[in-house]
Length: 371
Image (tube, rainbow, N blue to C red):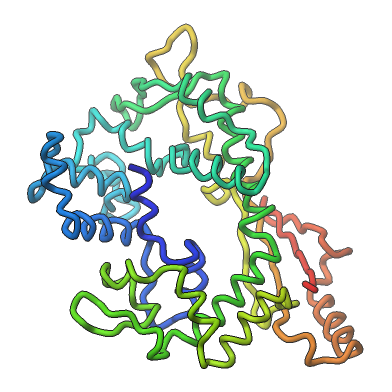
């Protein structure tokens, strides 16, 4: 089922949902989870899947609990009560399953701890394709996972819990995620390529050659295709080849530079990059529950004293990266002058690539120039 949660991604995955849509200010940015649900509904109708699902005993008629359950597995329903309302955390919001089955919502997309099969999948996939060793053993996690009763908000609830001795293995999930983000997802070369692709896509977004036909026959811009699922299914990475042949000279030139590896050396606009364990500056394991060998049916938070000693005091850091789009337009002397002026802005750093500790966050000023 976790594969359905990927269906809402556009071409180039998070790049389309994030960097590109952020830049198109006139378009309301949507979460890919919502798009995944809309795509799921579209596929049900287009492929006549409801009848097939009925054969397997699933309740898929209007307001059928199994359809609702699938949608809730992709995205948690939102509580509209104010944040400070004492009833906010106590009300059972889900409709697909009763509260006694609450642990089922921790399998695909675990909003409480981030420990879920979605993460297991992309860690294994990304490590395999990048040639990076995966320190997290998901099979071991499954071996020691069990549903336990947990005292939470003065009532008993059921959660997927791990053995207390497995806390180190669980930290490996988030250490591995952080490692992949540092070494690949937020790598400076990869980010340079994405910025260039973003610039090229913006140039062709309004062009008639790149309009996409919607279910109502309307021709939509690339940036508006995610509002119509029929149009969205046509928005694939294959359009990249078409863009190389476009008569839009500026966009074509950017893509030529990407293919020749003549990448941006600096950026004309600062972009903050955040690296964390998936929950900003919160330790995700502090929200998980564990059972002990002598009491396997009861889940409890694990004391920090029981966790292996080498733990960070903070769980996120931020980097400021600056890319230069057209360094060839300046002489070496002009480049040197501009670099020196820019360095002075960060006079709190005694040296380049030195972190500044600020309110338990590491701010890494990571200046670099891509050649």
